[in-house]
Image: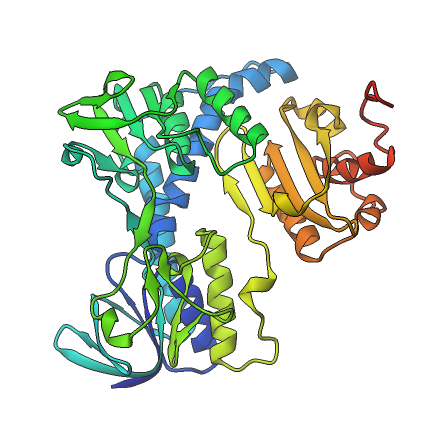
Length: 443
């Protein structure tokens, strides 16, 4: 049995690549080890964002109701976790069906690479012309004595109950998201960070999230050295912390398929090294989180899948990965979205949401939009903190990737009133045109 393309991994990257190639008349096989949808659907974005949405309502509904003059309230029901499970299962099944609908074949099983043109699946030898590796990542287990007493971030977002107390080891995006939604469910949460919380993020974003976590009752402890875990206790240089559940959210590592050494690829601790077309060597491509890259997100994985597929197809609209800036979002309240390189910016302008008419109407007034421009007046950086950051950062992604001049952005007629006006108003700030904001003392 021979295929034009074999894709190992049915997560976000794998299902997109498999579907594109099959729709373009390639004979494709997509092999998934466990469940289609990968980390995003089964133990990442989907269950995490579901719990974010649910606890946002739980926390904010009464507040917003009071602001709008409506008597409302919210409480947890026993179906919360089963509803999450239903959505995860639905999206996992849908991913597989979409691949099959495109014309590709799918198999649940574990592929073993035996040569540059062959894999073994159970007792079958399958030949291929091109191989796409899309096997993703798995939670990195920290080297801490007693870590077997803890669960991973993947397991934490799939808990089917609300623990009375929880210790989270790790101050990255997964740690802060888990900390906030479980705290809002009523769990007593302590978040232990080895260094500063979200150390790779701009200071204002870090401060906003830390303040929000503490407001929600999370005990945030930074610059902690974990000595050992024993039972329900975590021993550190800053004392002993006790939790019914202990979670490690200390990063992720590439999940490589068995036999990958047969391909003689360039692989480091962060993943498979690829070129700008996602080619890892000869007839082998690697896409998604298994790749050595900075932004390991579902939307980055989709982008990888498109680039590699177009290259395999020798399509005339072939694009290169290095030409684009990938946005990142943290699903906390407030949400944080970032795109571009802050160090390329020479000047910044910020516009607060509490000065936008739409935010004043809906009552969610926290946060701001910040944009940065280079010496050529091109917008090279965007940051959104606040309501709908996940949507607003997409607009800034278009602006940054198109290298739009800030003077062109100023003249964009955005809808009024709308949250996205804050983007244009931030641009207006470079020219003293942001009349919806009070003048600073320096003006």
